Image (cartoon, rainbow, N blue to C red; front, side, top):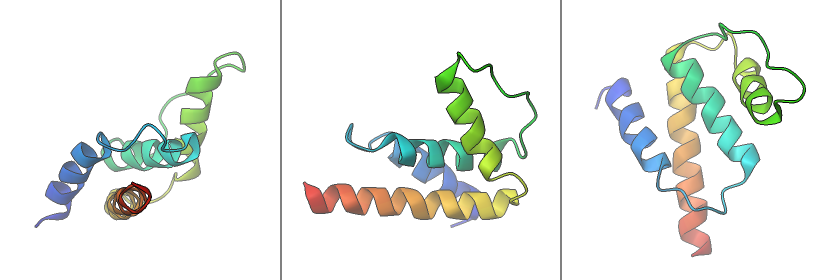
Length: 90
């Protein structure tokens, strides 16, 4: 399976992660997803009173410089890990 197809499949699987998934893990996935689909951060950092968007921006900024292929691979691995953890705790 091509990397992009596998990435898209895992992006769909990520939507099935349990509510108990930590915000930290959700932010990691968000950053990797944005890096995979858009590339490096191309917007300015949201203001201090916009905590949610600022955290998402910071997560994306944290993976800046990663190739889109590497970000896709990391995203797939992270989704697999979270799904395994969810299955183990079910």
